[in-house]
Image (cartoon, rainbow, N blue to C red):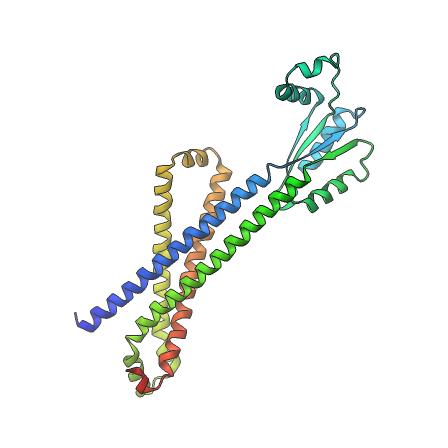
Length: 299
């Protein structure tokens, strides 16, 4: 094997290795963002709105309202009917049975529906709009719609700021990754600058010169993306080995498992596409520098 062939192989391996490392780090951060966003949605959906009904409203009417709320996909995550007796048992559990002794066995608690909104609607404006729309035309059965507005506002602001910070960090990491990959590829192209000039001297057009480099960049990006995905899978298995409860939780919940697989597929596809695009585009611009450079500047 010739010395130049060895150096070209080493340059190609170092380029793939550098891209793989950067794509893996970026993939880990993106996957962390996806997981954090999922967790924030779960926390948001724990906030509730309580729909309280008039004393005279019968159980069948309340259950019809519960069924209506459950059909509001995309707005209502869950709706749970709480009867007067259930409300009394819940209250006694929290404050003790003595609280009802002074009422001589009378249960003043109304029947209600405990509503959890989807994460997109967990903000004061959406909660207010939901409450107003639900109350309109139903004042004869609904006595009050209660929720903690300050809690809705606070949790909305916290996760909004968190999301903006994560997007900013992800953007900075992506720019750094692109610049590092570009510099790595530019150095690889730099080592072939005299070959490029020789091709120009024998009459090769710029698109003809670019073609083999672009093809090589495509394969380098593809290989780097695949290797980065394999590294991510290895990291995920290592993490689950340390925390086996994750596997137990996913195996007992098929919807959570499917969501986890979908999230990982999306992240992996993004890494693969990003690896190819960054490699090809970086190679294209790196080539331009040496295709149009003057001969005296090649040395």
